[in-house]
Each structure stands twice: as C-alpha cells, then as structure tokens.
Amino acid sequence: MPVLCIALAALSLLCRVGAPSLGSLSVEPVAYAVAPDLCSFDVFLTVPNNCSTYAVFGDPNDELYVPPAYQYGLPFGTSVGSPDPVFFAQAPLLVLDSFLTIGDEDARTITSVGLSWDDWTATTPLRTSNGAVFMIDPQMGPRGKIRVARLTVAATSIVQLSFQGALHALTGSVVWRLPRQRASLLCSGTGH
Image 1: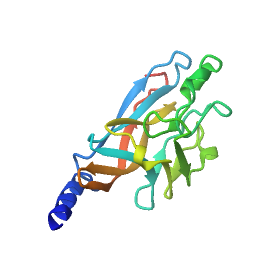
Image 2 (image 1 turned 60 degrees about the vertical axis):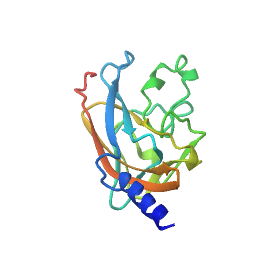
Image 3 (image 1 turned 135 degrees about the vertical axis):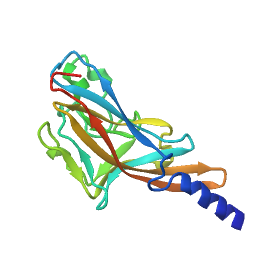
C-alpha cells in the first residue's frame, strides 16, 4: 500500500498548483462578418490527456475576471455553454454571444453558482471571488484541448480563470487545481 500512496503523490505533482506542464490558456480569433467592429475569440485550456477538467472558478485567492463582452440576450443567448446553432439562421448576431463553458458542452451538462450573469454586459466585466462554472457530472469532464470561453469584445482585454479537474491514473484519480491563468484578447476595435 505505501507504494500506491507514493505513486499517487508523484502523479498528483503533475497536476499541482503552478505545475508548468499541467496546462495553459490559448486564444484563437473567430472571424464573423456580421460585426466588423467587434472581435470574437475562443479561449482554450490545454491539459494532458490523463487530466480532465470539470470546473472554471474564482476564489478569494484567485478572482475570476472576464472582460466586458457582447451578450445576445434571452431566449437564444446563453452565459453558460454555447448557444444552440439551430438558431443562428434566425438570429445572425447570436454567433457573437459571449459565454463560459467547459469543452463544447451545452447548458444541459454544465451549470454555475456564485456568478452575477445579469451584471455581465458589453460595458461591465464578470467577476467573482466565490463562484464557478462546473460540470453537473464531474466524471464527464473533457480532456486535452477544451474551449472554456467564447468572448466578443470591442477592445483589447484580459481574461483570468482558474480551473479544477482530476488526474486519472491506473490507481485512481487525484484532484488538481490550476489557479490564475491569464490570456490577452487583442482587439483594435475594428475587428481582428
């Protein structure tokens, strides 16, 4: 049994706070002709394939900060999970909707707590030091490169997110945390 504990402890080091090889954020521009004065970005977290991600969070040590961003509004717009593409033809600006997600999941498999979605607008950022977007079933957390946000902004911005998930090994799973990950969204205000 001591060998098992040592092995799990060693594996958990791969997914520990600040582990340089655990994960990183990247940003990819998304071009849409419907609003040339705005810039849309997909924000991705990449973790090793043996690590799943099941939460995006902010806590007292690591505030979640999402810049002011375009919100489509109800009934088609979403804040958690991507909008249903079935409605893109009826609502062309829906492709610009900003949201947080965990992978390409829709709102039926993820939820949130402690986030003031109504306050997040094109002029007001989303912030929390006690909230999260998380998988309803953490066992279903995606692995590898996963989308964690689609953000449509009018100016260069910063996004800061923290993540939690599980390292999966033959001997079981260990929880990992990756705090305070930042990415820049470079936008001139006239598109990308």
